[in-house]
Image 1 (spheres, rainbow, N blue to C red):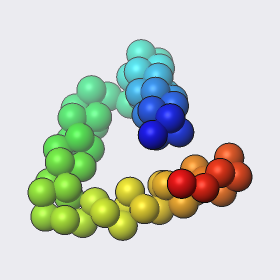
Image 2: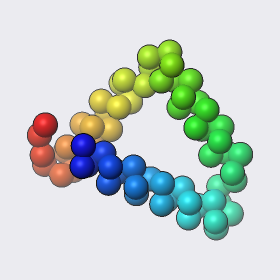
Image 3: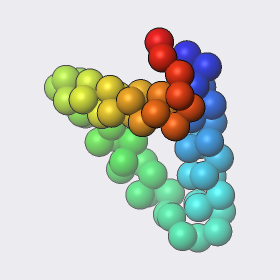
Length: 64
């Protein structure tokens, strides 16, 4: 749970900085957020969640 929280904070900070710099528009972020919600509702988010968990565990060398 701790790794997921840190990863979420890093992604939120990166997104904020990209919006602020003008590299990423707010409507891009909203569209990607809606896509994420849609993928979660139809059940396709599970493989992505497992892939991110696998990558985070590989980078931090921890197991759950």
